Length: 455
Image 1: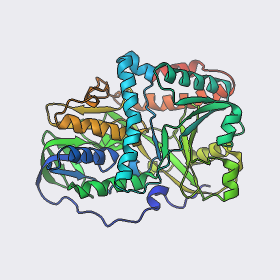
Image 2: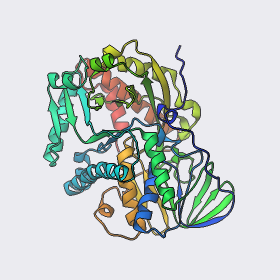
Image 3: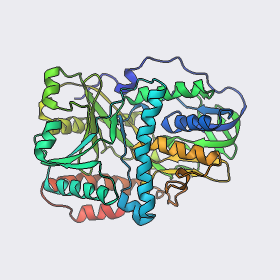
């Protein structure tokens, strides 16, 4: 039977408790009202203030800053994007695809620049990421990925031999992999709290314990009060299903995480990750890990069920069977960790659009929305916020021409089709990984589930 030290994320447990900021208790007026106290909302406030310091901006958070995915994620500031270069090129153009990926790379550098300029300690270390292949089909997929990057002009992705993998991380079953320097390890809760302090220093008003129950053109309802604004920004990501009229734009998919106790120097020597590389493998059901600043192995992954009606509940943050699976998956990947205690277990919801394409939406109705990061939001949220700030400020820049701006994306299906399709898709992904371990790429069931999840 699993028990856990705390349902709170490791990251939030490592930072000092802040006194709650004031709640919204009266009607107010602002130039921009932002709903959501995570990376998206905070970065948007930051870049708007950078463009126009006189802008009167308020941010409203239902719980506390970093309560959602920004305080619970895997701590990868990466250039990963849920839509591949080839898929973007087919839907838009090769030029659009390359432009978007270049800006993702720029966003990683931008995050580092802001951190350094403001002297925020977020355990930032650019050790890159390694993705290992453990069977022939995974290795073929790794080769195709590197070839695709290079075909589009990105040469910072290298195919690794079995020996080269072992030099970086001790995964005995690995037969090859990919390495790129385009990823940094961070402590995500420190980052979100650090950005909040920066924007408050710039004059942004942050309200916590301020539940937004209604969003309309030029106003929102917060704790029963009316907040008027020239522009309203919805930045709720995994909690978007609670916003009336937006419940089918993205759905909440739960990602769960575990963290070991701090390892000894001898244990670290056995594991590897000497340059604090983040790591994953080429399976279809996403897993991800990092070596934290205090030498824990922090590991997460998907597989938790989708809940009918895009329901969000604190109970969904903990799922004993998924925690057991994550623990066994980690031990299977890195056998030297078997028997090492797992001290933290937690989870949270991320936002997934129907076409898996992140978005920045802004039109004449003075209503803006950004998100849909599919779990790759640490860096993508920075890009989306910079883009939205340019749009709200009326600036025409290379960012405002990116394919994530006002994409024509369809909503998720109505219930119960949504629940049936998404959960079958999850089961199909799990089965596909099992088949690949047997040397088979698919079967009738996985072909059916793949077709259900096509855009």
